[in-house]
Image (cartoon, rainbow, N blue to C red; front, side, top):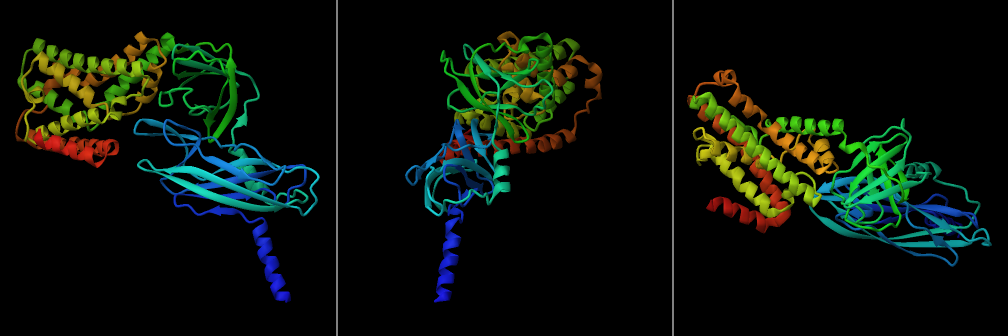
Length: 498
């Protein structure tokens, strides 16, 4: 009899305050109480500890441009009240051009539960939670569900897991503690956030609480103005003056929770001469670096060698170099103007499967040309301005899947610069892309130093076909991601027919 009572007591103790688990496939979840014996008339903190499997992620309260926020439904004893979940600072994750606000590692959502006064010690507190959330990778999403049960008892409020909960609370955004203000100007939203001039700031990002407040995928620009931080964001055209809530990530997993009201939010010095020159210089350097990327280097190499072999006079060489630069600059400016009009990010066109298919066909044609199986006169033909212009435009268009250092900051700044200055940034990108060929065309000594034609050129062409073929494989994978197996089959068929 004593043994049966002892076993019953052990089972009871194990179930009273044991964490409630959800058996899910991709995000394991566990409901935990900071105190298994909360005092009457006090608050007890509960945590839904969520642990995504490697490669999986869950979503913040505002999921961004894709995904769904988690949903919770409580069943509680009379008088017991559960507050809204408190989320830690999220991260950004861009998938197929869509901005997501996510958690990729272990994280906990905290709930403050109020226990009413007047309850006797030992009174049962059965807490039940039904939760739904979305678990995703960069390819698939799976809706998941968990039912959780915690059986607490009114006690003295001793905290059983204080250290664990302190760590979870440290991951929550801290209250700003000061007034933030915002101002709208057409499709630009500026938020002035009190922030000490000497305080550290790394990779800031503003996460709005309400979906649709800003264009999530558009780059964000931050500038210091004394003891204020000015966030310049792309937003839908709106005259709404309702307060804007959000979280400002300030680096190291830390963040500030704020609510901005209409008020003075001065324009950051984005249009200053130094800032404009810095952005243009970054775009120029970024365009120059693009020339060594696998999608551009083969085109540049063949065009430079064809110019050196032609042995033309100085005027013809310079004319073709200028035409090549004109094609590259015109294409970059056209893409930039479209990007500004759509308030999108660089390579926005890669979100359209039709554009990806067109790029795939072009890259396959280039790879076959380099392998000696297909002729593209604009690359290997004689010297002429029309061919140079088309080749420059082709190089700039093919370069859009590639990225490199300096480009992100420069092109992000272009979104908040005046239109004329932004066009200068995109022109700088095209000029940087064309700069090596301009040197070849305008400096005879460089052309003389290029190797003489011979059998080695055919071997070089075949070597250069390899990185271009790898680029084609990547575009094929991207097409499959966007259009599925049928889209990829269509792409392969189009390549075969072409």
